[in-house]
Length: 412
View 1 (cartoon, rainbow, N blue to C red):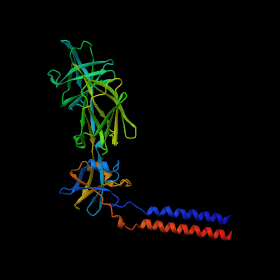
View 2: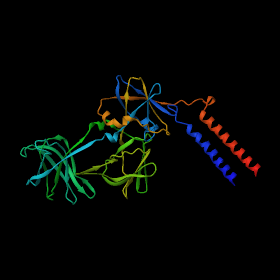
View 3: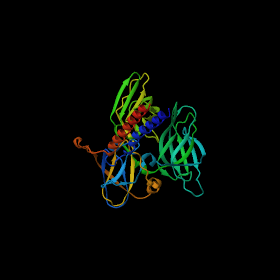
View 4: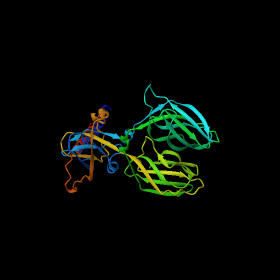
């Protein structure tokens, strides 16, 4: 019995040896990368940046873990990725805004608001108005005026605020940032005696974000089935889509849902376009906020109820780019490699201080044409040491098993 236990133990060790040999097989750079692009380098050293293009997104891993920057000798250079969503830095300053005066004239209601500075003698900067609305349904055209002293008023904008069932518009963006301390809201023909509250806001989005956004038309397929319209977008390049713009001119109000290529619901909401005299409400944009969608197939399901399908004349998307940044040290030409599903994201220390690098001057480069790896000729396959090692270990393990089994049977 003891001999049989020893045999089983030896057999177990022999079987462990064989798969362990596979651990010697590694990922070879750049042989295991299917694609690369030449980086069109400019003169001068320092930090270099480049935006990834559609071909990179199409062939690289979704998480971009297989990106590599290398010189002509194959030496790898550290880099980091700065995403388009991270570049969207929105800062909003809220001012305490109180109702200073209220009166009626020629059927219109005038509401005068005073904004308080954040600290004494500080300027008040405003470019956005946020209104508190009545709880009941209404729609009103309003006029907005600004003043430095509450006496002389400058006309700023004419727009609409409303609450219609579940549709709400309570924010207005002013044409530009102003330093007014007073704002007047004129509500013409206010027979309903609508009252509005006001919050002055300074909304600032860094212009850097605009560099990361592009727009284009994707191939799409529209089909109607039962009471639904299905719009399928071909996003085979796996672009990071932020907004989908539907061009629809007719009056409508519909619910929609968005699904990825696995049938997972990504988003739901409402679309509407109601254009009448003194009544204009429009929202035909599907936005994904701070979570861009990169599914290869995106399906929009519109519920038509018993209405005829919508006439959609065009579909356009906004998508975000990613930026790769590395330090050029005068070693010549560079390449961007991608297209290796087995690659692991490198761990570069430049990631630790990229926030500082983002404040440094960066010279933007462009990518060349897509180059695919040349497959080796089948008649002259290279000798693989890892495969030979596996064969030897396997043969030795098999001989050991046969020897021990025979020895045990003889002694028994």
